Length: 226
Picture 1 (cartoon, rainbow, N blue to C red):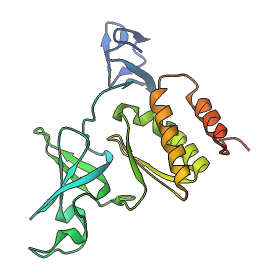
Picture 2 (picture 1 turned 30 degrees about the vertical axis):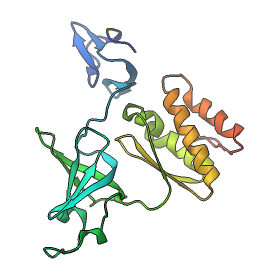
Picture 3 (picture 1 turned 90 degrees about the vertical axis):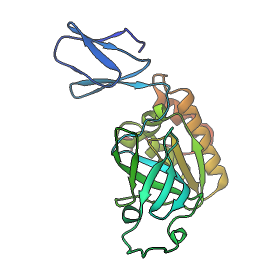
Picture 4 (picture 1 turned 90 degrees about the horizontal axis):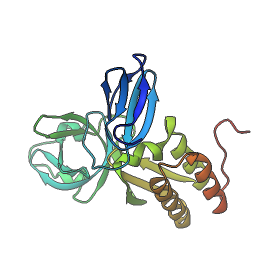
């Protein structure tokens, strides 16, 4: 969809991200892919930087440690703060060495629980799947392509995981962690994700990725297939 393109007519649908209503029409305001969720129409942008949002699960990198916690890079214009009380359930004495929890350079799967009007970002490690990452490899993708990499209800990333036998975590901020048993499986996963990123606008993307993985010698079973 391109800016100015009519997405729907009438009052049955509601405009959301990347759209607006004019008279009886819902119109695209940005370049991207249209998605309908119930009665809501939104546009997933094809480009753009990551803007931190409350509730996002991201992959961050510990940039600094101070007396109150950890400063974390978020792959955006703003660093975030992980306080001691949100970084661990342990009781931490004043002056204790915080590197025994997270050191500078560590990658963590963490969740944004607050973003202030001044773009101060607070993180937490309290929740399912939130943890320090060990091993594997990191790659960056355009944050706007994350929904296509994950797929509807996680279908795309699930297909890649099963085909390559790799663990994959896709942060909403465009940082992806990949860990496989074999290095070559990790490399195929990286190639696959890059292909999704490059062809995210192409119809029939699931079939394209399935064919790509099969040409790499991987067995792919789509949801619903025997």
